[in-house]
Image (cartoon, rainbow over the protein chains, first blue to last red):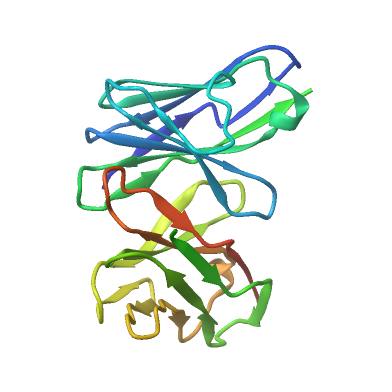
Amino acid sequence: GAVVSQHPSRVICKSGTSVKIECRSLDFQATTMFWYRQFPKQSLMLMATSNEGSKATYEQGVEKDKFLINHASLTLSTLTVTSAHPEDSSFYICSALQGANYGYTFGSGTRLTVV
Amino acid sequence: GDSVTQMEGPVTLSEEAFLTINCTYTATGYPSLFWYVQYPGEGLQLLLKATKADDKGSNKGFEATYRKETTSFHLEKGSVQVSDSAVYFCALSSGGSNYKLTFGKGTLLTVNP
């Protein structure tokens, strides 16, 4: 079946530094990828939608200069948290869409802790 | 806009008990409906889905029927196991240009032996 690899699974960084999270579709081409943030014991909040070769579409309230998304190929999207602060600590999850057949595949998530 | 309302947890059951997690939705048009499961510290896995009214999605003993008249997609399992302990999310997609998923808040299920 479809597999999405998300890396790293856990990262601890110092306040003020930047962290890059990768999301790769291993056995299919993903026209669209999504980035979510999940707070403890809460649902997933969609941050942005990225389409290969174009700028990401951010949800209202999400700072696009802080959460940089790049979808340079049909198999890779990256989320960079710039100048991270402790309030950015969260669980980030990516999802890839296999065309228009509603096949969403999720990555295993990245636990970001900013100290 | 689209929204999903699901039964608040946590839900605690004994092994072999019957499970129902309610889910209702509001959407334009004819959305596709999904149930996802999240085990501790992991991402989401698709449990089942239904793409049109009266469809029944099923997987691993779980079932849910797309009820357009009641805008519902309740999750059921006849006999739960300890390994079913997880968070369950109901979700919908109305399609459109980006096929965004709208999630419910999730329901934590704990099954005790």
